[in-house]
Image 1 (cartoon, rainbow, N blue to C red):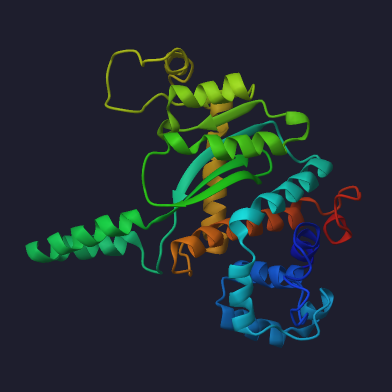
Image 2 (spheres, one colour):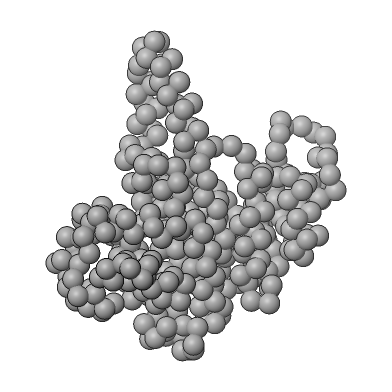
Amino acid sequence: MQVAHHLAARCLPKYSSKFSRHDFTRPQLFACLVLREHQRQTYRGTEALLRDAPGWCHEIGMRKAPDHNTLCRAFHALRLGRRAAKLLDVLAEWFAVARVLGDTVAVDSTLFDTRHRSRHYEQRLRHHATHGDRRAAGGRRSRTAKRTPKLVAAADTRCHAVMGARARTGMGSDARELEPPLVDAWRRYPGRRLHRALADAGFDAEANHEIARRDLGVRSLIKAGAGRPSAKAPSGHYRRLMRRQLAGSQKGKPYGQRAQVETVMSMLKRNLGDALRARSPRARRHEMLLRVVTHNVMLARRRLRGSRQSRSVPVCVAT
């Protein structure tokens, strides 16, 4: 909570309006929301947790625990769709000061559940259903696919920090999703010191190589596997280059580090959950971004402990 409070104090205005009651500041409420994600609690559960731990409230300057309705309104009022970028900027500064960043990012996408019921359970239900029930379940499945929350993240392969993220709704090809998180990650590296970008075959497109190599000066390594399997050489100069360079085992080679982004996705889901609690598409996108920020806050607390103090790293993190 202390790290999240210091982070929000640099990025968020203290109050939403000069006419508000000023019972809590926005950084304080943001710290409570990060605690909610960290503990995988509901709003009522977070309220009860803070009432049972008044010392946590006092550490960030709160005289009492906020009500669950206050936390819910704060989540929607923070507008993380716009402010998450600034939060990730400050976190990237902290990682850069501590010198834990590498020079390679790996990009991947993942889907989150909209309820606490696994897809395997849904598939087994459709498998044992009758023919009529299967047709109805297939229709529900197609509607569900259009509302499925999707997160595309670019993670540093050395420290597992998420350097760029985009949240959206609906399934679909990943080829169009590479540019936004990659550009954000390139911008956040100190001195634009990003050398490589790794991605799987879902992001295979000649335009993605041109964006990375020509526009950003980043060496892109993307498996050439889009489309139907064919013995013909892929179209496009960079895709043909990838077919030659990434043939065979990549163990011990730069592309072998792409698996680190799979680790990051696993950390997000194991530590913070794979099902979202929000109900509207907009709130689900904001919840995914809040989980990305929470993941980086957790890394900051663990990896930056004991690093050299500076103006960019708060004392609660560096010591």
